[in-house]
Length: 226
Ligand code: DC
Image (cartoon, rainbow, N blue to C red; front, side, top):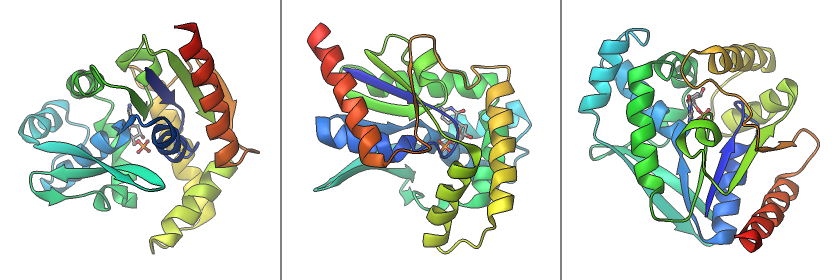
């Protein structure tokens, strides 16, 4: 089964997707991490994130690997560029600020979608991102659109960044999230939008466990239908 999860920044996609993958024994694929890793390399190479050809050329040289990690109570994706692990570096605020520009280019997305479809081939996966339900896995058995209020999403990001020692202000995060939402949902190539057949879950007032249980219940129903 393929479970595809889309939604805006900070809606809880990756936390929820990892728990769902753990409970079902599926592979978890974090597609945002792929765009972040490319952005990280774009920054290192001092390439203009708005220059499609230059960014595409970085992607062509990029030896990107997602390595699944399974622990007793969590699954995650470690990200490598060549032999260097960049799992933590790609979460830095500078990467978050530039990733929308990098991921807006047609040639970049075409290549990334191909890689993602290859990863999801012939195995049970939970994949999260912005265009998974609409473009990458349009035939996924279960499609989820996770959403939450901007304030709640900014609060969650604040806790996450502070726990990692990044000094940030809530108001700045609200501004950045609003800007990223606008860029991600208005870009020309596969913008973030809810697929018609996706189940929308507003996570503002829900705990992670509640969201996970809802998705698992939907997965069981879909499985029984197959
Ligand atoms: O989920 P995230 O915040 O790690 O994603 C980082 C950025 O990557 C997000 O702002 C938009 C882009 N992205 C995308 O365009 N398509 C995806 N499938 C996943 C992420």
